Image 1 (cartoon, helix red, strand yellow):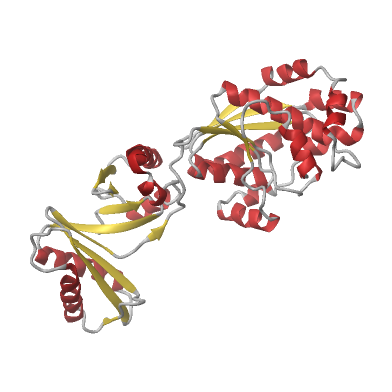
Image 2: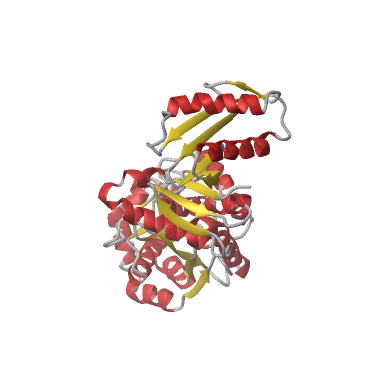
Length: 394
């Protein structure tokens, strides 16, 4: 029944002179998401984005588009030829479809006269078209202009008419890639996939670095990371994952440094390695799933010591003020939670100290690192990494 989808883009609409750049990026991302639907066309016009269905199932298209960052809402719409009588026919067609299985409903018609040559003004059209609906469907409707069950928008245009009723919520945010690329430290836990989602929502492409301790951790733990990345694909698009073995570094720390510093020293190596990979892959920032005070290394002192290992790039922590329950709720919404809670050992648990330092002093940490061949360990880890790429249309 529907001919087009009307895409509303929220924040993109207030970007001033940069608006065309944002809109073009959003169109490109929508086209990427709808790659498998060959007949669908995405076009820009009248300050809107339109998806021309050309016979495709609107429900399938909506399901895909509502996860595209930058899309605030979607309205499936009927398009008719221009003219007032054609507008009425379009309304009748919409109402027939929306109410065929319903009992008595309330409704409202919100008419918009975009063709200024037409003699009626918009409020007059709304009243007239409302009367037409009551006359055409006398047993189905009564008017409610405050909180109607069916809110019909009817646009009279010079070249065509557009009629719609539904407004389906999208994820909002900014078009993916409009703000560059970020490198996420992706663990197998609950937090980091949510952090990747949130930063992708703010317009970043995502590159990922995952640290493991094979053979002390199993290959299944790496497969779990691939499953998490696969779950994120509808939001982030393709993700390249750099699998880095941290075992040699952890063994060197265990042999040469105080036990209570194992966690924070390992974390510093992760950040340093991630920054080098991020720079190599032209990322503009690092992203972590850290939340203040959740674990020993995430106290203010611990985060200070972690940040000190990063030389150039900003570190974004979108979950820093989140309660754990809020993170879990969001993880469930984006379908990463069930994968995250699959029990697999990660590199942080292999050499977990009995009493990790919760308020590590930076001076003590730097002193401990003097016992390590930092450059050699970092270079070995980066050189031996395995790169895997997850694509949306595999």
